[in-house]
Amino acid sequence: MPTIHEFHCMLIRDKDNPEAECSCDFITWEEKVADKQKEALGIKADKPQLSLIPPTALRQEARAMENGLKYGRCSYRKPGIITANKMADAMMRHIQDWLEGEDNAPDSGVHHLAHVRAGAGILLDLINRGILRDDRDI
Image (cartoon, rainbow, N blue to C red):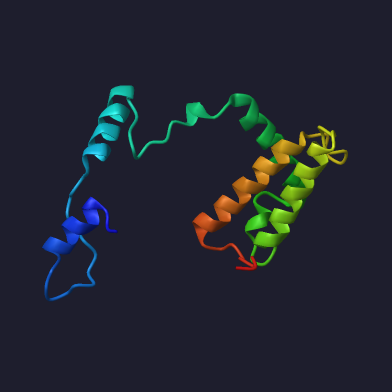
């Protein structure tokens, strides 16, 4: 079943080009309420509230990234260095080690969860740049 917005767009869509994206500015009541709530809190859609990230988590993630400097700054961006599965495997090993009671990685001394955050950050960076070698089994 189409949403209210999709139904609205079906009604006003260009008859000569039915596949064209809808360019209307239709907004649902729920979206208006959410926008008003964000506005009341001073939240702007185009500016993420970086202050919501716990400083400890950010610092620990930076420590994990510093551990990778031995390969060069942002070396993970070189083509073919990082694949989706390679990074997911590393992140899962850190999670497994943490679940087994080990807090810090023995090689770096950095918390395992900080390495997981760093891995997720690297993946997001590569995806955002369109250079992730995505070898997931999908």
